[in-house]
Length: 421
Image: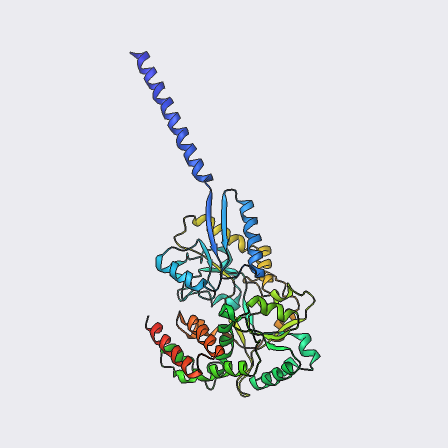
């Protein structure tokens, strides 16, 4: 009986050992199981920052065996694609929030407030990416602080002093001189629509919000804004088109075309963030480029800068691999990595202590450091969803299919609808 008991006990122990080994093996397989994540960006495939992101992702994958991050560059439909994904609650593991980390995307993003790098947020971007409860949902790799990009050589050759372009009247006079010399004053890549929205984002504040003594800030936020005041913004867009300040192919060229023309001295100005300057240098490293503040609409006001999110990365709260996702974002916060990403856009880094190479723009950043900065107009003063209305009505104004009054009516209709939502 004792022998039988011992044999049974040994058998049971062996079975337990086998089961235990099997269990440990499965657990090990789960740990090393390939993990595939998706990273969607609003940046196009040819943009400089996209190429840096692709390199950074490849480095992270090499250091983390079994991890694959599929980078999907954006296109003109990026915003609509993301809205569809939000509606279906089927989002990528990471995405860039293109100015909407708090107002639009925060309920879908994983809070990152407890991450080490949050304490080092650049003061220039900290408030923009922090919600009312003090939570942060994205890592900003840079700070968008911009004016109007320009080719310094073009203006120098035509004896135009950029420091004297303080009002739109000053700017118009400069455009006339540039046009008379067979150079495009302003290049717009309107085929992608968003550059037209950018132009309106730059111009609208000078009419409606930057003048401390005469502005519509409160009315735009509480729903009482009189949209006939938007007419003047549309009038200026049409005026610039009719006076041939824009490139003749403004509705068929792209953002990359703007960068190329700026780099080659075929265009004097471009209404984009300073990232277009970094892009332009990839086409002509010998170009001499810079930025000026956005002129005021009246001598009583002052020129201003545009500020806000440029490159920000957040994590879907329902990602299948939260630890890998947080590790990747942490990797992006590494000083060397962030420096490369910020440098790709010629912008200051998103974290204090990280140096980026702003190149020839360093002088301009220093020169204009004391000027007031205003957030992108649509992000602060319009309800979510109005961006598409701005771009479509802007295209309608340039094509001649809309009048300024009709554009204002369309803006009001969508503003009222979206504000109610």
